[in-house]
Length: 543
Ligand code: PEP
Ligand code: MG
Image 1 (cartoon, rainbow, N blue to C red):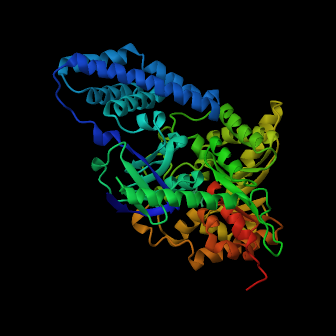
Image 2 (cartoon, rainbow, N blue to C red):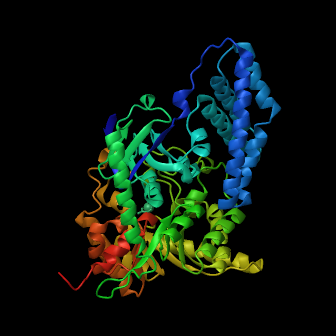
């Protein structure tokens, strides 16, 4: 039995099998081999397996994100049949007598460089596909990572760290818990865990070399502990705890269909945060009254070219229709900082959190912004969609946004394409936006306070820097006073103000928020019923 402690980002407990997600860079070593034909057979078997995985991914994506988005997995299947690519691998194994993983890595790099150097933009973009299929083959050859995830049993994912694009590609049905060596409590791994209702530990000092796929482990998010190869006693205790948790969950179930209203009659709109179309299932399952934050940038992650207007339109339409008239607040893309996407070519920045990100990209590269706005305005015909803009700092930015929205609407009018002008709000997540919230409130329909970034910028603490987790205090008076000010300024202008950052789900602050007059809380789906209970248990007239 080996036990490690980390920081828990979601309180839950599981007992299950481990699946280690290893990064290829650490894995691929050049080794001499003797039997070239046997090594080639391994590549052939890996290619068949990769095609099988891709077919499954295609079918999953088809259901979740539509045909246009799923097509990439078909393209990857075809690439795996490319004679030039395969011959190059086979030749190198035969002539140099080196191991398959190494050869695939080198061939992948060579082909990717060749594509990247081409003039045609479409061919350039294929470089990332070649890397992707090569990485898939290597994972299979090394017996690590996704092979286990997409075909095996649900498991506890153990990784060094998880980037947002890695998490977006994961088969969420196959994840029991997340355990990472790195990552901060405010990272998107943490947000994913809360969305999915699964225990997650970060900052666990593990040596991944010592952890093998298939090991049994207990992840206890209450204690912040992971135990590998637990003894029978711990397994038995864990089974009891899992059952107790299920019972508590059943009690919360009874709150489904109930209003989110305090004992003295104050109504709070209780919505959920999502990152993908497939998360809508969690929203409905947890009885949220709407979607308060759809992080649309996740449609841009984990792929190698911009999603087209049509793909986005279908995604937004699907969410709006599934929510059947309930409010769906879609945030325009918030790329940059920790959410890096190669094809945006953002370049390296010394200080990306304060860099070229979110609305700044949209205002500087209006073509990207316009494609998203067209998709949103068109999808708004099919449900109750509102648009929300991230990282706002000034009234001028809002004016510029409105100019672009106006231009997009004129275009749609001219083309005779149906659309609806939606409610528009801004995220309040910079101190500047707080300080001009009086003026901003006169320009928009609503505010949604992004406490994750607001805390980062107010306390001058990089939310991704795990060394600073102890200093990252969203309960800081400065942050709470800002929230109060923003709500007051919204109400002065007859507008509503909500919170969509993680602080909105902090049960120790629910009463304080309700007393401040916060109109809406948008939280991880797994927190909806807990917050509803806290709201219903609150009496703002009592001291
Ligand atoms: C926030 O900053 O609080 C927020 C909700 O946005 P994100 O976490 O996606 O930056
Ligand atoms: Mg933010």
